[in-house]
Length: 182
Image: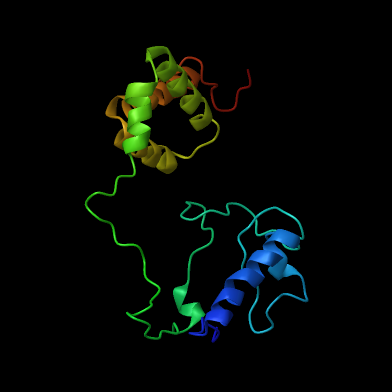
């Protein structure tokens, strides 16, 4: 907190290049080394692995997640340093435009590039991975995500997961009675 970019072009270049050089020479966890770590605040790196890892943050290390993992706190950085240079320089989120398309390339691959056999293999691979302990809320989001790419793909994956779950649930006659062992 309290440090920000400078209008000095040399300092702006160093602001980028020093961190980049550290990542290249030492690795992604360069700020965890005592000589490189800031004194005013703890390092909050959510990088899980890599050279010079001192503290493992645990799982998961991606955002957003459904396990209560890391969350961005822009207020912790303090007020942003801004100055005028042929227009205002600010840190802002990207504003979506009408021509932005996150699904077009994946849709083209699924609908045009893959043949029926390849689409079937793709569905089988996705289903197999989703059966490996994925929680119901994440499954629901995954099905919706896949439907954004292709409705048929999302429907087939959801049906495959539901069919496999149904195969593994014991019927009423197969369930053990309370107090009895099989």
